[in-house]
Image (tube, rainbow, N blue to C red; front, side, top):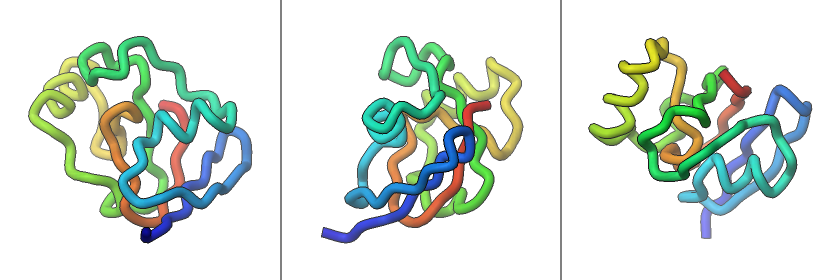
Length: 94
């Protein structure tokens, strides 16, 4: 299975994960600072800023785009509960 590296700037840690893993799963496992409430993509608490590798995350769903708009996110923000890692990226909590 292909692997990808994700770097969490808030804790200065990079981990290698299987492609297709959701960011929130990795964050929770290693103790990074991304907070979350629902894991369903409709509350917006797990917003993160993608510092590098935005194209290495899955495309946002219609629901995620709606929640990002409602939370006045910028073009570098994503929901960690929805974004799946498909290549190397670097993130931090928004």
